[in-house]
Length: 78
Image 1 (cartoon, rainbow, N blue to C red):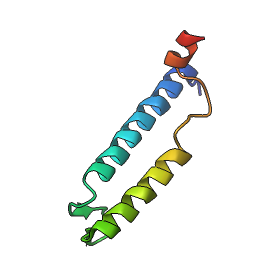
Image 2 (cartoon, helix red, strand yellow):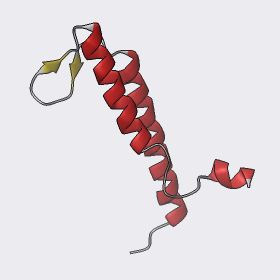
Image 3 (cartoon, one colour):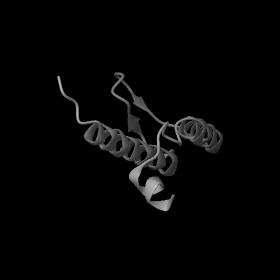
Image 4 (cartoon, rainbow, N blue to C red):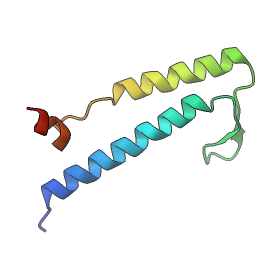
């Protein structure tokens, strides 16, 4: 099986961008009802719950902020 590594790398970068956009949406709309496909609707009702939820998403986003390889944009800057 032949894998085009450049294509695979770009697919990972694209997925990472979409995941970060999703996190940004979660942070922005922490006060809205959310369906995480777990069988019930989730909602942070109080400002304290919303703040805690946003902090949790920010922490998760920080863990996966950087990819373990340089992207084409980073390589162009070198």
